[in-house]
Length: 555
Image 1 (cartoon, rainbow, N blue to C red):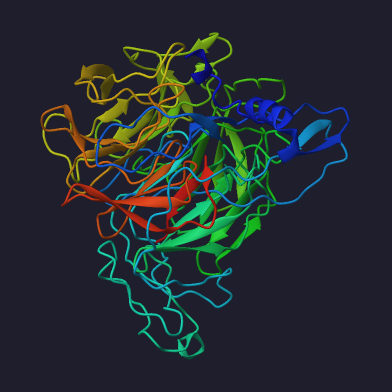
Image 2 (cartoon, one colour):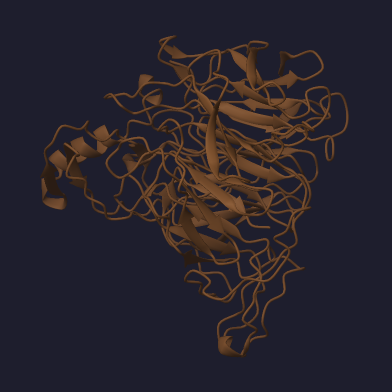
């Protein structure tokens, strides 16, 4: 079980696998003065037999990524998240690293039948995109590892035109408000401007035998299908992606193809469909950090992005960071802000968008070099002062957990406005424990335990006010298809439908339709959760089977 703590160090496992299966691995050795790349891959089960059973079977291990970007809380009924992409070929003469090219891993699951929806194609959206990508869609709350974000108000859905000769989507997950081109019409005849509103952008991560990817892809809810998008400027894993107030998406830091932490950042423009590198870089190169869009403080920091902690990846295990900085979209620059009370990586960061701590960001748990392991401490960042202060302590140390703000816009009762912290792992094993942070008392208190111990799970707030917690792993060898719901009204967890695929380190995104998209986590398919039916259904095949990617709902 101790291996769970080091699950981000997955490249050691790949390296060992490459030596054992030398016939399947091409080894390229480049020697210089740099550090070897940090591993990110670990054991993942071989393909399970799909079943309706809510619990996942124990399976023989195969190579795969297990370190997720935590899907975190929803600030509204219709959340938003972050994504990763395909690797960019880059060789650094200054890198002294052993580079192992690993062949693509076998599929985790049998391929479900293809969806009946038509398939669309987008290679960077050369033409301008129409739609309301403007201000006024409401503030965006960020929380959890990987920078999962969620809009406080529902964005308008949209769809790319259907390819010539294809039929309209019949997927139950399709957004009824999405405007798509009639079947049989030529794409050339469609107006130059199409809307990507309501689409989900997934970018970067690990997959296809690569430690870091630069590729990105888009999910169209109306077509229930994925298509390649324009690639990022840098390959990244363990990075963050944050939807800004103007609809652009800030992608920052992470680890590059060489395994070193990055200080670079870039912006995705939903109108052009392309990424552009920022001239400004972060003050500190970092990976496994958090990024949170500040809103609700009624102070100059509203609309800025708080980037906190992470690891510098300068040593064999990296060094956890205490520093934090702010990105200002108005200037396009990063500036240092107050430092955290503790060094942290793989922690959660949750915006409290209303109430007595409106605009504050709750930082909880994670792993810390200075503490020698996982921590139970928490702290609050006040954007009005630019300082962190210690707050209540959790009941147990945890990392790679989920943290979800129970927005009063959809949650009623005594837990409205609280933050649900669930699962994760400590030094010994994943936990089923959960607790809530109360902004009124600035303290944590326990709630009912989850039905299954899990870490690397995805979590997102639904329009019903319940929190969907899906997938993850419950041990070194047990990977989960199961999912459950947290009911704030009764402070209890209950099992819900089982996913079609294993998802470990996946993202969770609530679509305009109210369905939740669970994507990535070492599978070529995503799952759609229908809250009304309490069931999951498969989507079209993803372009890349990734883990540790981010997902962002475009608005």
